[in-house]
Amino acid sequence: MQSFQKFRRYEFWFILSAFAIYITRRLFQIAVRFDMDVELAEQSTQNATADIFPRSIHDIWQSLASYNHILNTIFPTIAGGVLFFLAWAIFHYMAFPRWKSKDKEQSLFFIYLFLTFLLSLGSTFVYDYFKLYWRFRLDSSGQIIDFKVYSLFRKAYLLSNTVAFLIIIVLYEAAAQFYYYIKSKLHEETEKNFQYLDYLLTAFLAIAILLFALVGQVPILFWNGGLRDLVFATIFLGTIYIAQEIFVSKVMPHISQLRSKKFSEGLTLFLSVCVTGSLVYNVVSLVFWASRGFSHVRFNLSEFVIGFFVMVFASAIIAFLRNVFFKEKIQLTTLFTQKTAELSSLRSQINPHFLFNALNTLYSVSLKENADKTADGIQKLGDMMRFMLNENNQDRIPLNKEIEYLQNYIEIQQMRIAESDNIEIKVNIQPTSREIFIAPMLLNPFIENAFKHGISFRNPSWIYITLTSDDTKLYFKVHNSFHTKSEADPEKDNNGIGLENVKKRLDLIYKNRYSLDIQQSEQDFFVSLTITYW
Figure 1: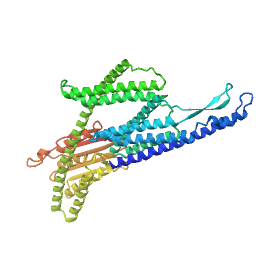
Figure 2: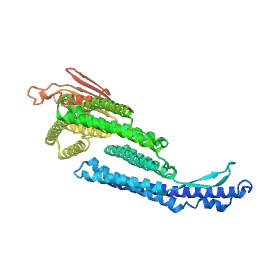
Figure 3: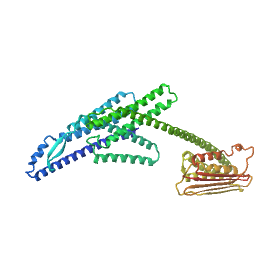
Figure 4: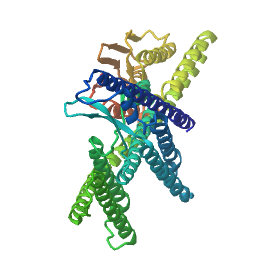
């Protein structure tokens, strides 16, 4: 939250700097253009012949007597820019956050909204009222006579340009909220690449704003050109967006209870938004035609009705489609949650089972061997326990970490059977120099099973373990002798629990990316596992 507030402060100063750059550049451009036009007019006067039209440099400056560069260019440009910036800042930092938070101080929202409107109106009035323009007056032969100074101040322009200013502020806010949403989603990701994407997006937007401040230009009449189409599209699409949100949250949850109060309230709100949107669309259209000089514009009822029904139909269709995809998303989320819980449960079954076996093994060794071997075994067990605490709860670990864990486990088991001549253990585990990641604790249950069922101090026993890998796959094989447990063995009924857990984990983690072959006879047990990393 603090980082977001810090970013908002940086945004304020950055936009203020962009305003200052734009205003300064425009003032310099206007001054240079004014000097060039005056110089061009003076040269035309000096080159003209007296018999065509008698004129002098004095006539040129006399025609500019009503134009004051400070009052008619510098003052309205700076004052209009400052008032518009204040209107943007109040809406962006005061009005919209209160509307979005829906706190108890709703009256402040309307106060700030009204203040935004007044500042936008003041910005338009100051600029249009004081700003004067000039153009050449030409004679019949196309020669420059002098200048004509004029104003574009009109009441219709005052209203239309104020509406345009407000729409620009709303468009910026919509774009900013979308950017904040993307930024928050990127910050939720733990991968560094997503953080770099956030920096790239921020840099791109900052460069775009700076480029506009350096080379862009706000149109003199806002309703000429592409802004008009952008405004109409924004009103139309914005109304549909708000209406479908209301339809999804207020209407669809109660659609099975058509006579309920909540359904009628939601439907009324939905239709009211569509009516308001169509009305605003048509009013802005009237403002546009009035600003173009049409004095006999009238409200068109048929256009209003058509716009209303199009908004209702489009909003309802989008809401129904969203509901379909939303249901699928809920189902996928539920399935993912269930699978995650199941995976955690399987891990919790594996860990205590292994620790119980390992502690029993070390206890047997401590009775049979000297203290040095016991200390070595305890050290290896400590390494394994650190692995299980630090690595086992991660989704993926380096393959070499898993190999180190397997080797510690095998060496602890070999300590137990070191004095038995009729037991053969062959291990071929190849470490890898490549950076390969796999899910933890997938291989060890097969080795546990081999030592549990393949070792007998009374009968000849053997275990062969092979682990290799290449760029895309892991190859793991365990082949061991098989000795049935006696009826008195307390773990006789627990046979196969660890292997079943591994099969379930493989289905969850490497679905369609592994092959597992298990063969068993009365004399031996064979496992072959191949895993594709990606």
